[in-house]
Length: 406
Ligand code: NIG
Image (cartoon, rainbow, N blue to C red; front, side):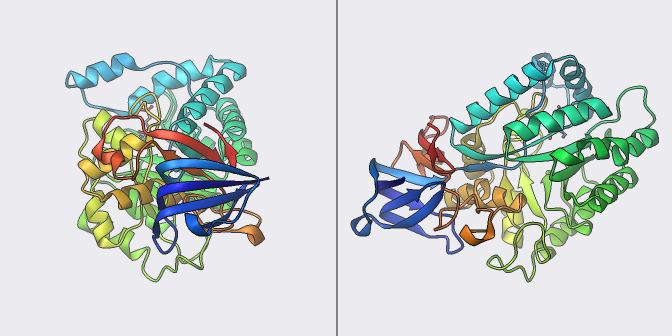
């Protein structure tokens, strides 16, 4: 079955050549992009969709979420808006609610959040454990996550549960808990921050998880300067997320991690790739932290991702469009840069930015022949409208792996 999407006013491919085509068309065949080019040259297909002069982008790749949770933290949010500051301790509230929720309800809640994201143009999603914080509940979270999203990250090292010794808990995270989640996850993460895990504890977690073959990511430099970024680069983590408080040495380390990278030749978590800096603007606003210095990072040569960080504590939104809008209006990214960070950048952070028919694993986050047909049709003639019309829901249609999802 093939589908021709034609009469596309602007096709923002986010491919390696950064092509933006006018008066374009795309052909989907099964789950893959089979052709793209000028509408006048388009081949015939089984069915045709008239895009009506709208803009077509890759679907959003949301590379940082925490969707496996129950409960509500409205009161904490209200207190923050009244002047309280965010602290990692709030994670315990969600952990309590999550542990007492059934598998059925946790799955249902997570599926609802995924559906909400897809309806807004997200076509590839990562999520983390981290609200279980014991062996049974972390394994349960990982198992449920693996049934509802594309990529699962183990975040047993999110918070030391009340009453537990930090060293003993770190032993658990690096030992029995890791073994229990391992069948369900591809990534591991650690919240390396004051009030969460120290540099020494984070190092142990990263080492143990890397030894089992997991790709790494780090929550770092969210609440103040600290060792998170340097640790992420040292361990060759695929991403370091938050990055609000960076020293010049942090920016230099991230930039150096990409020197000599050839985007056409490296894939997955392999050599030659650096550490993506993932900015989470909705979280920054919701916690009243300074926005991450996305402009400076890009100017320094760092590869950037934008993600929603959807979670009940610091960023209760799955709107990638909101993140893109904020990145343009307040972080001084161009529209093309912001959309790239929310599509190709997210894919890069997940090691899914390359791969075609012959690789057995299709690239996401860009529109190119052989890549997964993850497409987002805006109800606007250009992607610029994402920033020009802030707050307006602009998703008109979504294809996920070639299937119409909205
Ligand atoms: O990415 N920073 C750590 N983890 C989440 C927040 C978790 C929570 O407060 O529930 C985040 O912001």
